[in-house]
Image (cartoon, rainbow, N blue to C red):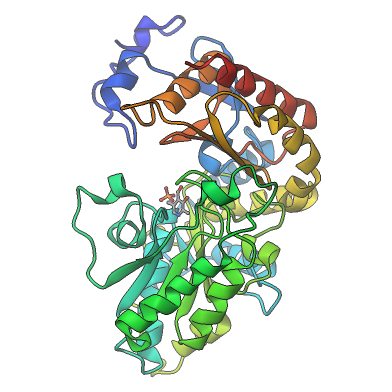
Length: 448
Ligand SMILES: Cc1ncc(COP(=O)(O)O)c(C=O)c1O
């Protein structure tokens, strides 16, 4: 199969050379789904079919597709300063973007985490956060803290630190992981929390798992604990009421840094700029990426408190304080895209818009309660996770069928195991939400 087999694309390339990420390559290439263009909340395929973007690309295109302001800013920056290093020289736009991010930085109700380290992806943000946590503990004389705690069913990207603290079996089983990592139990409990409207009632006590790990390993060995305030990639797992606050309390009591991975929940996905703000919990470090540039340029940012940052600023001034950074940290074109993105978020109120769409979003999924094969619906902000009963002996296949059939009917969804996840652009209108709900409900009704 080549793209040329599809209508309208003569002389198109073969599909063989591109080894696709997180995709069953042979299955895809036998029946490809190819997107050619996008505007607003819709893609168009190479054969001219319109597909509603139910996933903001990969949880990143929060301001919708084809934003002229971002394209213009990127073009202008490319023609002015296409690249310059940020090691020992710099350019004003990196400082400008960091300052703008600092203004809206997560705070959890306290002082903002207004020190910003730039990366190029969520995975790099996670590695950066873990390294900052270890180095911080050394800087304050706590060098025995070389352990880090993740959580079962967590997803923190694909680099070695992230895979080690992550808790998804298939992402881990093929690779060696870092020593000195342990995991909290996950918080997913369908038996107690199925179809809960908003945050689950049960499970705050699962935060006490951190206390258990402290008793097992000793607080003096633990540098940090990292969790997603809302776990997206692992199937939309919401924090039980009170869970994150309790985790914060235990971490503080034992001198353990709390890292929130907000690569998905950051930039308005849940109805507030950051989940830390929404849940009123102030972590020490926050990782972000994706929607920071509306997905159009690869970029990430790690936010740190001044306490963390300032602990590095004590040695001789001629010394590099943190031996870490990427060629593209603070890439000028990505910064330009990010600034234009923040302008849109601000002008259109997108960082809080999800909250005002709550009624329409809830209505879209009403029909799934009691629907055949649906064992849970988890909805929060502008996210929903619909969990299907697995087919006997073929886990994941029912949701995969829903994914391919939804695409055929003009809707892009995401699946993880037997969970279907949706997270449309924050510009989506209530009528489009109704259309998304109606297509997917129809697909699920027709599923074997
Ligand atoms: C919570 C979380 N952390 C990290 C990542 C990794 O981000 P990236 O794919 O940009 O490396 C993701 C990606 O989905 C994520 O959801």
